[in-house]
Length: 256
Image (cartoon, rainbow, N blue to C red; front, side, top):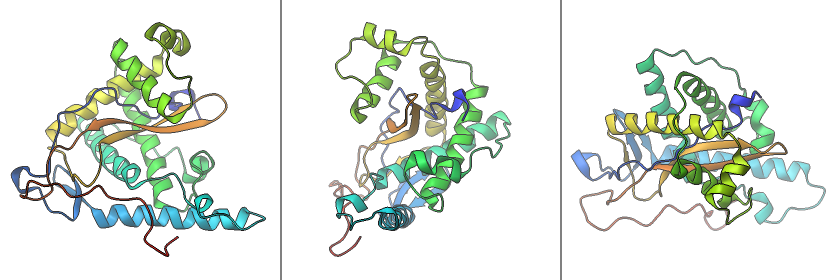
């Protein structure tokens, strides 16, 4: 995988808080609205459950002993699924506005090991699509200026994964990141997605958390997957002022 793909995408600035409650875009069975597109809660659930099922099957087939329930659970969440669906939609709109052609270069088979997810899952296929799309967008956008805020946004997101030493100062992060070209291109992509999200009137169901850009960084030894927030939600999914409880990623009793 080429160096430009070492960081698939990062978002370094939060978008304006957006709620499903506005303009009638408040159906409780819709996870997110992006322009005239709707992404249902059922679709998010289906992609998530398929990923968990195929992951568990793969673990069972490769383990010489009976895996524990925890070992059969992937770290993928429903939020991760929604992040991909929204980012791909916004990215396609940006590409169309710029007249960009996205070529199919990364196959699910090429990233399944890094994702620790079978290539046959829709989740892995979506990631492959996002790698191609975000790479094309990053090539077309001029690098942004490197600010302390954008630098530390990337650092703190990586810090949460345990992939980098915690508690570093701005100067230490600058030294660790070097020229930080990936932060500059990521900031440019973030700005483009932010503008498109506002243009497309994105609304996110409050059952989900903060929606973010799916991100991948190559540490030289492994790939780290994480997400930086760029779309927030601030209201109920219906006209009632009390938001619903966040969607749980825990399986139903007796489910795998």
